[in-house]
Image 1: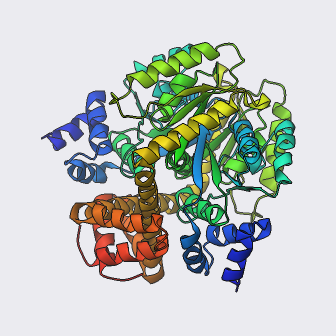
Image 2 (image 1 turned 180 degrees about the vertical axis):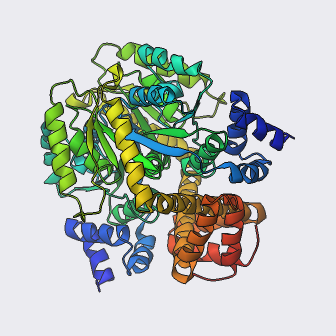
Image 3 (image 1 turned 120 degrees about the vertical axis):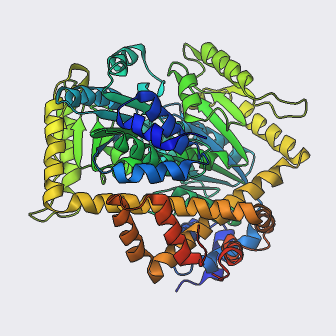
Amino acid sequence: MVDVPELVAQAREGRPRAVARLISLVEGASPQLREVMAALSPLTGGAFVIGLTGSPGVGKSTTTSALVTAYRKAGKRVGVLAVDPSSPFSGGALLGDRVRMSEHASDPGVYIRSMATRGHLGGLAWAAPQAIRVLDAAGCEVILVETVGVGQSEVEIAAQADTCAVLLAPGMGDGIQAAKAGILEIGDIYAVNKADREGADATARELNHMLGLGEARGPGDWRPPIVRTVAARGEGIDQLVEAVEKHRAWMEEHGALTARRVRRAAAEIETIAVTALRTRLADVHGDRRLAALASRVVAGDIDPYRASDAFLADLTGVGG
Amino acid sequence: MVDVPELVAQAREGRPRAVARLISLVEGASPQLREVMAALSPLTGGAFVIGLTGSPGVGKSTTTSALVTAYRKAGKRVGVLAVDPSSPFSGGALLGDRVRMSEHASDPGVYIRSMATRGHLGGLAWAAPQAIRVLDAAGCEVILVETVGVGQSEVEIAAQADTCAVLLAPGMGDGIQAAKAGILEIGDIYAVNKADREGADATARELNHMLGLGEARGPGDWRPPIVRTVAARGEGIDQLVEAVEKHRAWMEEHGALTARRVRRAAAEIETIAVTALRTRLADVHGDRRLAALASRVVAGDIDPYRASDAFLADLTGVGG
């Protein structure tokens, strides 16, 4: 068994191996998971969580890296959680990106973690918030969560950050893509990256137009700004950080930060509860019972809703 | 109220508006959802479901379109479900793709549906199987489910098909990407599309190598074939169809088709059950109770696991 209090104390001191160990414990549904989470809980709440999302190829990792540099210059401890399978943080990278990352890899003020979450019980929705808690408790003041803006779970993780930055790039038909993927609804800030390329103006214009078409905003509402960046050269990154700070100030002024964190915690509780229910069902007799019901559904004997009623009646003693 | 039996009868006759109406009913959680699903249930089981997945840009939609053409030539009724935000079936398309699609749009033997599922209760995991049931009951003999191979939910939907085809294309660093995204574990068939391009041999070789590195296979196990296609010109599509038929025959011989469908139905029942639990909680007092617990989690007062225990105790009368 791991000495959890000792491990937590080491993580607070910023020892990367202790942080890594804790994340592995909460990611892997270890028997000590609950002990770890209970120990972390009073230590959390100090981190500001920034989600970065966008289609593959818009430059999310380069932007993440540039933001790490900016926050490190400001003296902040930074955590990076890469949920993007194409991210160089996750290993799938072009050589140039890897080199750019490696400057952070040797910086003790930066903790980088990638998530390999397929096959997990509750998947990304379950593992990502727990990893964020570890980084938060370990004293990261800023946590950057990079997710690819394509999958449903991935987009939701970014949307649940304190501030969600959506990245686009010129000439990728990005406006339409973004609208399709639903990421036009979740951005608190939009960044048109690779803004030195042809078509950047058109992308910004199109984006501005599409955002204007959204729901009407009142005078006190947050209007997502559009920032232009060339992350590979660090251009526009200060403006992006400034936009994040403005959004943070706006949220604190309007009580929106706490409201958002409560929503995030509620989603986390729900996911844990659902995972617990599934486990409980499987432990008792759920798997065989479920398979029997599923066989009847495949045979066209009952529909999946009646099967679900029967399944739930088993669990809660109440019919649907 | 909709006359469900009449609508189902019309859908059986192949009337596209009736099919569309039914899908909207099951997608939108209409009050008649359960009635519709009960009516469809005895009519399902006749369709063979083929999942197509892969990174953006590998040519999923072009391949889907070419498969539609092939199955139509064989006299089959075909349904297409596009869960890919970049798919021309979903509207986000280059003009050329749209033109290629439109030949099918006017064919009464083809039903095409795209999913716009964000914000749904149970999301894709909930809506996609229900739409597949409608297409199945409406007499589609082949259902092609096109999903982008990036998101967790999206990959899972493809993996739950009767046969899952994973597409790659040369020169996209696809091998690594595919491994990262976890789609190397789910393919029953692999297609290297754009096989006339430079690098196709290398991609096929790399893929072959990576598949060989996977778990050891016994003599009776299915070994995923690698097919080369140039979908835009219809090349290799016959071989792809042949590979699908071989996989189907293998599954039927080994009882694997029923086993897979039972697993798919079990996942469907679970999703419906979980959605029902959430709705029930929200109906009674769940939302307020959950928000109160979430506030305590944000304050660091309790950890999310203890909050989940309290939440579940409320629902089932049993502690965690």
